[in-house]
Image (tube, rainbow, N blue to C red; front, side, top):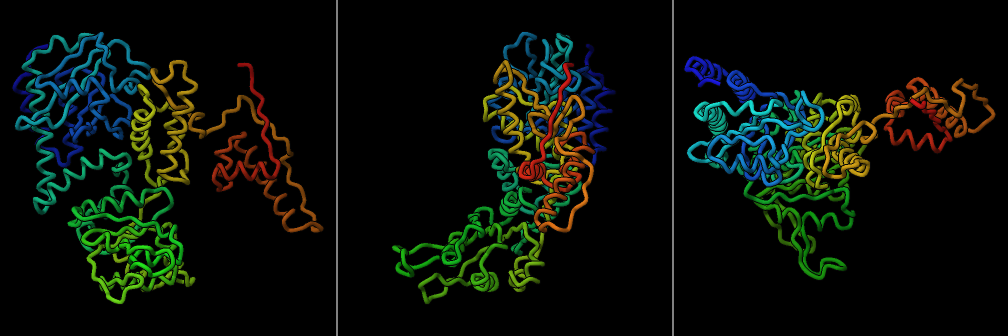
Length: 526
């Protein structure tokens, strides 16, 4: 391959200069590299502490963007990061490829192939890497070293420019340092990052960035399992209180008799069992943030005292006459409709308005389009590391099944589903943890696949309901008929039947079992 000519370099520079956002810039960078080097898979990854984070990909499965690669877990990536020059791997390299099974044009194990990495340096500091893979062995060998160095320099300059623009968007040096530190912290903790590219997710991130650096109380609302605690952590991390404590308390677990003590503390002997003085959560959070999770469960008797703390910053520990002053920002979360709770007299109206100065809605997973695949990629990498697996991926049919599922349990359900599926796949794999495990819809328990139409043990024809029976018996009879009809119309697919009946799949299965509805499958020899 000849040297990269000056015309191509000028075109690449102009193309990158015209890029508006980071995503556009990174996509154009990979397209430019493809013009110079023929490859089947290409990725740009940024360095964040001990992790490499994908910023843009070509020729790889979409889930790769959701993965986070710990360098010490991937010898090829570790070798690239340790090098100061472009690094070509031998075709028979013993190092496993981090994209094994994830190349779009090669669904199974990667055969003997060509692999190369370009470390990206700025001011002698590694800031990221570019990885290139080709199914044609030896294709990278003729490329002159100088060509690879020029491409690496252009890539490093583009990545550095994006990083500098991000820093300039911060209003002070404290914010600049904070964002970098938070990124490293988020990536070092599993489940510590907001992942998603959907419109709903971007709107959430906009809200977080808008209100984070204020001292306003924030009411975080959303269904169970959407990640309200993660939003609270992000709000704290991006605030000017980030150097202070973030104290979490689950209001649902507070007995009414101890709620006041837990929030405001108590003195020695204040009540039976108070053998010593103890600081409350407000005192522990002084100078930082207090996160009231499940605030809708807080006893009414305590709500008035919480209101006083929010209004004036004054608290009074149980058993003490003297009032203390604290400087605390309060974040609250609930899966209840607090406005409705106020109307029903279960929650104080004045406290509701004090907590919801800036309400934030965390969207359910079913409203986040293809974010489910990015999140799946993240959980696949985390689960593979926990179980010591060589590679964990989704079968093509599983991607469609995940996108079609309604996710009543949201992100938490997705995480647990992948963990269970990985255990099943590992147990069924003849290669154990050493092979590439592809999670099928059956592993994920998302679909039933009868070889022939299922035959129900109950007739599907609706029966007239006599009036000489109890309401309970009549109701159960109607429920049974509806379940049978839904199962027959969905060819025995429990997931589809649950959608027809607007039920959770597990709840439908339990109800059917209780009512005596059974499904018999006859499998063909094929």
